[in-house]
Length: 255
Image 1 (cartoon, rainbow, N blue to C red):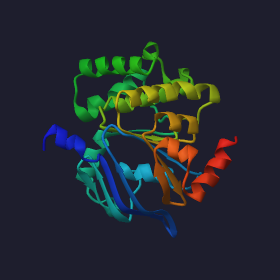
Image 2: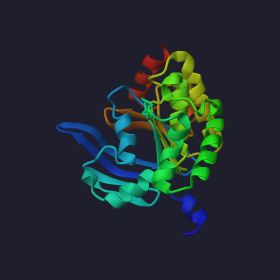
Image 3: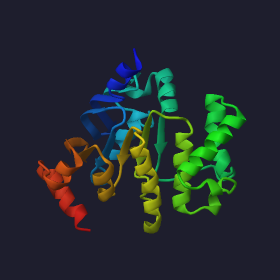
Image 4: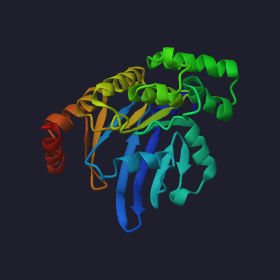
């Protein structure tokens, strides 16, 4: 397959995806495709299945029925297929609500650890990449500090640099600003805006509706485990077609 053919294929394809937590049906027959370079923002009420959806993409949650193909690798139900899952996790970066940094390691060492251990790059290469990525997210001057010495916004930007150090083809964001103080949210969103401008493929779960309108190529509204509506941001926010979408946006946009 040529590079152009490769890039014309969806990087994520979900078909009839179903996820249960015991008797609770969390995701219901989800069909979704994401193209290379696309920024897809997922919105919805708490408990609607947004985070579970993206956690299925890199195997952090098992699913019971359906299919997921990520960059040509097939994920199968019930967590089987360890080889495909391992490949996917090297090609998919994820930034969580919590920063999950190693507190005993410096910022630099947090960023270089995975490339050294997983990709087997040299220490010089890993360090050069870390410096470049920390500069890219605006905190190169913090490289030799420890996480406890940083603000929440700075820690989340370290987490972003750490994910990017693996040179992922896809980035997943699970409400990356929800644990931050309001004044720190902007600096993380700015780093994500820059990634979008550079063409990184991203799936973002967020409550930041202004950010969603600005950066998304497509917005998906999930209601009780189902995709209720998906469209360009101006269509979703200005002319939602589904009553459930309208009701949700009326609640969140008035605050």
